[in-house]
Amino acid sequence: MNMEPINLYDFEAIMRAKLPRMAYDYYASGAHDEITLRENRAAYDRIHLRYRVLRDISRRDLSTTVLGQRVSMPVLIAPTAFQRMAHPDGEVATARAAGKAGTIMILSTLATSSIEEVMEAATGPVWFQLYVYKDRGATTGLVERAESAGCSALVLTVDAQIWGRRERDVRNRFRLPEGLSVKNLMPAGKEQFPRDAAGSGLAAYVASLFDPALSWKDLDWLCSITKLPVLIKGVVHPDDARQAPEYGVAGLIVSNHGGRQVDTSPATIEALPGVVKAVDDGLEVLIDGGIRRGTDVVKALALGAKAVGVGRPILWGLSHAGEKGVSQVLEILLDEIDSAMGLCGCTSVEEVSRDLIG
Image 1: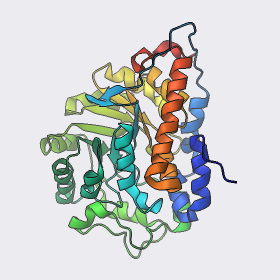
Image 2: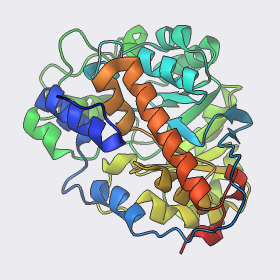
Image 3: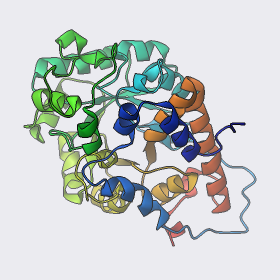
């Protein structure tokens, strides 16, 4: 008899058994030798929690704020592409689950559901993750639609002007299944992968359409065309973190794209302290990559993150049972954070401090 999953890894095993290899490998893979992919996870295991005892932990509050928005726990749903490969309801189901959990969903530009479809289903805050296209009209259209539909922030991905070589996708000749497309780009006529692409169709799509000239000056342009706060996602170097406040950025997300861009780049939890020190409380700092346990969240908070983003486990839950599966993943993570905080002697997110790191 199949047992219900009791931790996030159980959901991954379900997805691996359920999805076609091409879809599973797309979600699971990293760049080249996948060293950073593994290190994102392994680095958390090397960090010890030096817990405190004999504190009244009978009442615990996991809520916090991110850019002034109250969330039920310090966990956001990180942007992941092509969610309808995991379940027919895709991003719409994820948005519903995020709203019920009281947290923020970050919607990918490369979604298989449109901004408008997702926002119609959403009952909580949604941020829009943005890739910058060579066609600035198409990019401006995405920003305007996100703002008009009710998204509450923009998340500019800054580590993907060119695409990391994901060898599993190359071997599988990755393509979207019949009936799926990059739905947000339909108005610009850029919703399909190139027909004659060798290897990964997505890599060919990015090479032909994304803007490799993206630079700091483009942040001025982006901030000038929207009223929404703008975060940048993909920062690991302290020097980049120091520059960000000069360009009107509202926050940073320490991220290496889930180990899918520069292989052998540092694990995000290892990069986090340097970024936090560089901004010196001037910006809110978030982190994603490799978070699988409640103790991981506590470690990230202790090292200065305001909250964390979870990506692949959301896809695992989505594959298992759509909206219900995503809700299960978030509920398990919430319970684990509650337990980890309490066992460390903390009754609120604000009490999680650097001295917990052994």
